[in-house]
Length: 184
Image (tube, rainbow, N blue to C red; front, side):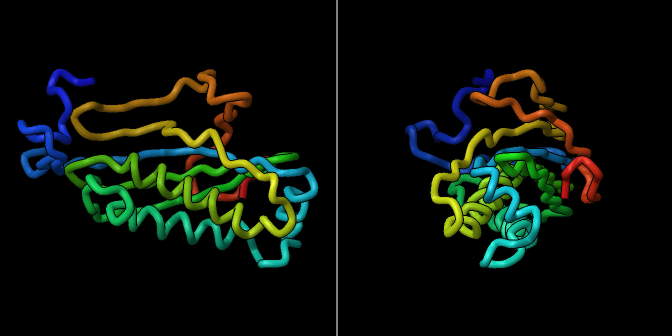
């Protein structure tokens, strides 16, 4: 906890939205990652574009972008922000799909919640698109991996930090480009 105490409570202990108007406008970026674990057969179907509902990753990408833009409608004390850019990328493993979201803005408050929301909704969309093939899927390891800008500066998650049984390997480039290592 910061030296300012709990910032989302007023002196009477009631929830409040923090006043960010005195804060300086800066460029801010956040990166979140997560995984949808599935059977190897389901991962293969997604990779081949053979899921009956359609292009799983295209739909999940749009869902993640839309979710980032609607975060303040979902998280009660989150400020509405003018989002400058949202990238949603995927890497297909043998038995999972890894998701990376990157959100950028020039504003008075950070975009960590927008990146986490985009990652979560992209994961939920993958589940929804694939559930007829695999109801045993699990969603996990959703975490903030990086944030820049603002008074608190830069935060980067230790790539060796445990997020459960697996640790995300950090192989994403942070751009919206496809690569040859399974990232799409």
